[in-house]
Image 1 (cartoon, rainbow over the protein chains, first blue to last red):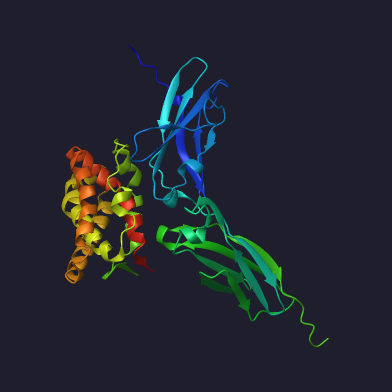
Image 2 (tube, rainbow over the protein chains, first blue to last red; image 1 turned 90 degrees about the vertical axis):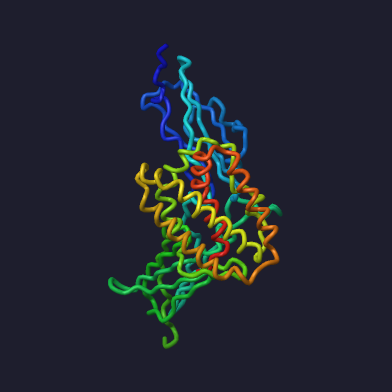
Length: 213
Length: 154
């Protein structure tokens, strides 16, 4: 009995996670027939059953949002996809063990940059995640990562940058030249897990000094 | 940077290094664990551990990892080419155990409840085939590190 190799039906089954938005993605055959369908199951590590993900049964697209199903931060998960083509051939592949705490990447923060005459104030807004506390409140990144801090830079000129860092959300670069443009970059850092967001950038011009006019 | 398990303080072990070492081998190690319906470090072992209990529990777990898990996983670490990260973790766990040993003598009260928690872990370990149990325990080090992180001060 010759078992047919169907591994080409399905590759790279993995979670892509950003700010705890956990999306399962996979690849099919480059020229996979349009009638290839995919079904998704997921499982909590340590439990018996595989559960079917509603809304991702016999679908044609190659991704499935498992955010709600994988939202317990103390749990680890697996997911698997079964691909079935028009000729009835099928293949199943599974992810590695997934921990959203370890795997999620961090998006740039949302920041308001406020120019003044000789300073620029930067207010970092909280980043809400899909994760909810037991009382139903949506958790922010700060709630989840105890060691989270913000890292800010202000480019003064080609050779000189000012740096600020801390856990608070309001920062101010002072002692600046009025009526001058500056480039600010702000990142979220989570040292313990080596996480660092891409930078949020704001280009701001200090106000003109009208005191003597 | 130090760990503070209740009254037990441990300096000189950097948590990021432990994470870095584990991530270097995580997928290789966890892929060897086919028993997905069993988790050794379950919620009942690690959740809601009091400060004073934490020193007892971490000491028992780390000693078990050093004396049983690392000892029996060494050959596999060589086989899978992950000896360097394996040694980083083993050495740091050994340092933790020895430093926790010194500070442990002052504490008696919560030993029983910590012991119960450790036994939950140990009994689950014993129910599996020896090699499978060692592989599973080794692959669950991220669960242990995540718990230890709560007691880590930068």
